[in-house]
Length: 87
Image 1 (cartoon, rainbow, N blue to C red):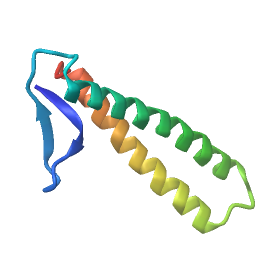
Image 2: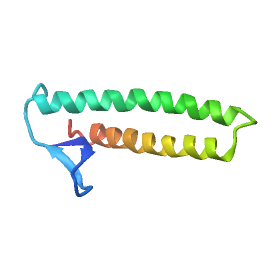
Image 3: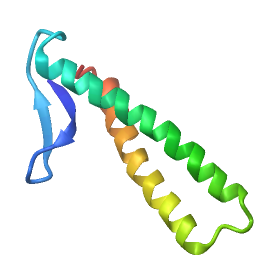
Image 4: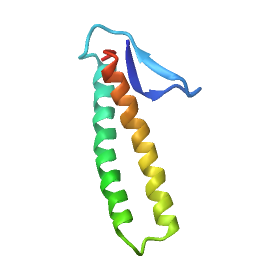
């Protein structure tokens, strides 16, 4: 079983049961994971820039932190999926 990088409409995890890593759904999940990782890199860079700016206001810091938490959740989900051998 592979933990997919999205949840169902009820917020519960989605899993893929397949022996074929080249299935359409597997490739879609791979593409989404790659996009999430790339986005996390950009968010980390942006958050770092906000934190390095002594003039950054509360709204900028809260926005950067909110995006960073979202990205961290995505990256952790990918890490859990990969570490449990569900890929």
